[in-house]
Amino acid sequence: MLIKSNKFKVAGLFAGFILLLFLMCGSLIYGYTDTNWGMVYKAFTQFNGSNEHLIIQNVRLPRALIAAVVGASLAIAGAIMQALTKNPLASPSVFGINAGAGFFIVVAVSLFYVDSLQAYTWIAFAGAALTAFLVYFIGSFGREGLTPMKLTLAGAAMAALFSSLTQGLLVVNESAFDQVLFWLAGSIQGRKMESLTTVLPYVGTAIILSMFLTKKINVLTMGEDVAKGLGQRTGTVKLLAAIIVIVLGGGSVAVAGPIAFIGIVIPHFSRFLVGNDYRWILPYCLVLGGSLLVLADILARYIIMPEEVPVGVMTAFIGTPFFVYIARRGFGQK
Image (cartoon, rainbow, N blue to C red):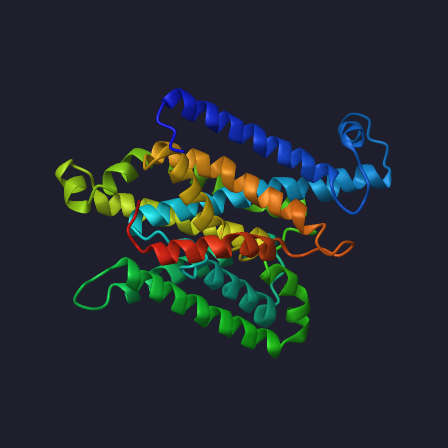
């Protein structure tokens, strides 16, 4: 289903944007409290302070916006990681970046009693950066140097290590366990608009920068020797790309916890639609990643209603079969 014409790619991107807006509107309507399109319209034009209007404005609107931003961020981060590492399984979750950021926040909550959203953001960035460095360092050991397989194993090891440390801390600190349990499963339930506005300047800047970096990523995917031959400063490009991934991954964890598989599924689906041109892959990741997480959040409200399933569980349910398929297909980047 490869779209070859630029006109059709633009049309597909526009359709994806409309889909995202439609799903966000659906997120405002569907849930345990019965609302409809008319109530949503009046909540923003004729607000009357009713329970339904309060839920739409203060609960569902932040959830829809957070899901769209986090989904887009994770998908773009995954696409950039797959391009740089030439590893089809690369994503913030597989490489342990989500787990590292989450561990740092749990340490801050359980040992230092941090409760500031701004502090969570910077702590998540620090955890993501340290994890990325460790994965790269460990994956570079040996005669063969850095390989996709070694990166994947190093990422899996870091994810397991930080997950185990996180569980150990929570076992000995019950108050912290109650505070972060739902968040660790990956959830946007109960998040306020403040959670988004705290990280949006960083995440938004990273998304914009990633779009300006697409041509350089295209050149880099042709091989480092070719890129250098064309005059590209590959070290600078990789550093900027790494910073973007850290900001997008860390910011997402700070808001919604460690949500998995968005960064694997969406880049592959975008590549399936538009080919290997990252000038199109990243914009498609933006709209499709946001759409998938908003859809997963809507579905999570109905699985065990009146309770909710953490959205991270829904994305794992969707992404696990795809992960197995990619792993079985091998490490050759298509």
